[in-house]
Every structure is written in C-alpha cells, then in structure tokens.
Image (cartoon, rainbow, N blue to C red; front, side, top):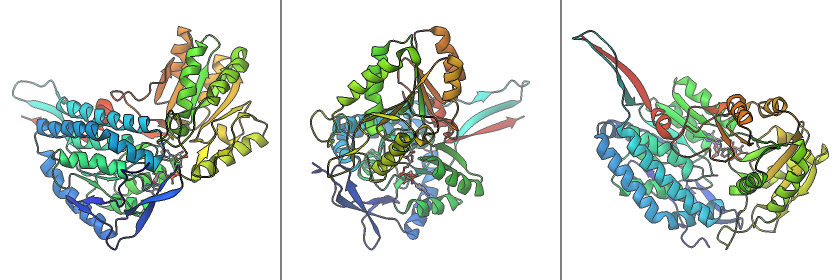
Length: 478
Ligand code: NAD
C-alpha cells in the first residue's frame, strides 16, 4: 500500500535536508487505516530563524537571476514532477486517502502550474507613460520579497504549487508550511525544485505547530507577503498577524458553492457532471458543489437521479481498483459530518442516501444526499467539506439568486440552464469569484482563482496569481 512512503521525513532549511534529531514529531496517519505511517520533525524556533535568515539571503540572489534562467529551472522542476508523479502520487494517496489516479493527476496538474508561471514571468510587462520628449515615466513590477505560505491537506501538492510557482517565478524566496497531515508529497515537490537547480534557501519547507510557525514567521521583518489557504477563522487570525507588519496577503478561505439547476437545463449533463464532482476528494474541496437549488418542476426527478448516481460511487482505499472516493482526510471530518447531518435531520431534512460512517478502519463516510434541507440547518450555512449534497427546491430566478448570495461566502458558484438570459443574469449577479455555467471548470490554471466576501481576497493562478507576488513601482526620470 504505502510501500513508497518515507519512514522518516525531513525539513528543508538553508539548502539542507534536516532529520528529526531531538525535535518534537508529528505522527503521520494513513486515513484509510488510521495507522501511523511516518514521523515528521517539527521545526523549533531556531530552525525557523535559520529559515528566515536563509530566505533573506536567497531573495536578492534569486531576484537578480535573469527571468529566462528562473523560468528554465521552474520548467525543469515541472519535468521532474511529471517523471516522479507516480511515486509522489502514491505518497499522497497514503497520507491523504484520495484515489491514486487523482493523486497522480494532481501532481501533473501542479507541474503545469510551474510551466504556466515560468512563461507568465517572462511577459510581466510594466508600462511606459506618455511624457514630453526628454522625460520618462514608467511602471514596473518587482518581486515583493520573501514569502511565508501555508497550505492545507486536501490538495497537498496543488495548493502549495499555486503559491510556490508564482512566488518563485516572480523572483521571491519562499518558506512553505504545508499541512502536517500530508507532508511527504509537498516535500517531494520541493525536492524537484532543488534537483532542478533552485539556489539554496530560495524554497524551504518547514512543519511544526501551525500556530507557532505562522506567528513566528509572520512576525519577522524578513517576510513581506503571506499566502494562506484554509478555513475562514484561521485566515482571519493570520490577517491580524499580517496587519501588525502591514504585510500583503492572499487569502483563499473556502466556500459553500451554490448550484443553480434550472428546469430548462440539459439534466443528464448536469447530473453526470455534478454527481462525479460532488464526491471528488470526498467533497473536501473548497469549490465543491454543495448547496443544490433545483427548480421545482424538475426537483423530484433531479433528486432521484442524483441519488441513483451517488449510490454507484465506489468508496474504498485509494490504492484499490476502480475506487471513486477515498476516506475523509482525518477524524475531524467524519465527526463534522455526523454533527451537520444530525442537525439537518433533526430540523426536517430527508436523508435520501448515506448519512453514516463506513467500515471499522480509517475515516470512511458514505456519499450522502439530503433533500428538503431547511435554510436554518447548519449545513446550509457552514461549509460541510465532506461528501454531502444538500438540496432544496426554488421557483424563480430572483429567489434563487437571493439564496445563492445569502451567505457571507463567495468562492465558486455553478448554474445549469439552456437560457442565455438566465445564464447572463446568473453570471452577473451571483456573488462569487468564479461562476461556471453548464460546466464545472473553475480552476483552469490560466484564470484568476479566488473568492469574494469572507472567502478571501487576492487571486491565484494565471497572470493575476503571479502579480500577487509582485509590487508595482513608478519611476519618473527627466
Ligand atoms: P483548521 O481551520 O484548523 O485548519 C485549516 C488549515 O489551516 C490546516 O491546513 C491547518 O494546518 C492550518 N492552520 C490551522 N491553524 C493555523 C495557524 N494558526 N497558522 C497557520 N496555519 C494554520 O481546520 P481543519 O480541521 O484542518 O479544516 C477545517 C475546515 O477548514 C474545513 O471544514 C474547511 O472548511 C476548511 N479548509 C479549507 C480548505 C480550502 O481549500 N480552502 C482546506 C482545508 C480546510
């Protein structure tokens, strides 16, 4: 199963791979079995200071490396990631649980992000302003400086890739703290960068107690930018820390994506797409379709057909054959599902499918479909981050737009309709960073990815994701 999983793991600081020594450890658990598979060293305060010092020294060296050389190293790292994707994917499945094919796909998708950013960096043009002869005014982009980045466990490689690739392409040094629960696969991504020739100290990886690491790094004068993906409460906490030093931030804080299914839609297409997407990564996806609003005329049929498809989702160890959905990533998730589903049931929702944990080992949970979920049920208000679809009927376009916008979150939103006017109004009026209509593509890599309202601020991916690691400077000469 986890035969390729490293028995011990390392930090990467100041060009050195660092073993546990006398440091505290975090036990890494395989969520399919609940068994410990490795020990991860936790950085102490001296390690973090050394990483900060190295990031400070590495920044001017990397900033002043010509963009073509920086891009060549990133492209080489992308090649190495593709070559090593089968092994890195196995590590990810062992530590996170997702089906192996999805884990390998995540690694190759992350490699693509390095290619995208390597090319974007070469074309990060500024502008020349109109001035009288003899005078020059121009605007240029420069790297912001050393970055502290914090990434979660649901996409152990892709989420940090979204931070490493643009930061490095822009010319920043970066200290990454991936989630302690899923450390091996992001460590291997950084190894690809080092093996591709990235200078010492330019990309470092630390783990530890998340609150201690983040407060230590963000308090340092060395760090000029903070990037975080995770929950709203932690994001708000890090924003306060960053505000102490007036540091720039990118915050990707999750969502509760509404799905607007109109009675004029291509229902088979909507069902086929949504029933797969809902259970991808066991629903532990910030853009997972979550609040299903289905127009009354097709509500019953849609709920029945969706449930039939959800029944066919094969749940099991991500290393098994033909598995669609692995376990939840940690014991907190099944506990959260029990609470949310119990609350919905007690407030009158119908449990059409699932609603319970599975098996004796690991953190498996049955794909769940809830219908007629009242608006005051917690699951209609807090991000479930699990394999649960919550459905309600609606009648009018105005009503469903109001429903879609009723939460303080706004990351992704989806709609299915064959009516152009409806599509246009949904696109314009739904409060979300990304709206996908008749498809579920919200993260193509070359488009901005990020939320509005409490889902966060700043964009990742594409040219906007690169500029998030740059500052603008206006230079006036005469
Ligand atoms: P959590 O809020 O404790 O942690 C979320 C992530 O933030 C983890 O990776 C964790 O290591 C990190 N973290 C926690 N405290 C931190 C700190 N002080 N400094 C730096 N990093 C810190 O909760 P959790 O149980 O891991 O997940 C709960 C909820 O978080 C989920 O239900 C979901 O809503 C949200 N979440 C969102 C994403 C996303 O992609 N936006 C990913 C993971 C979790």
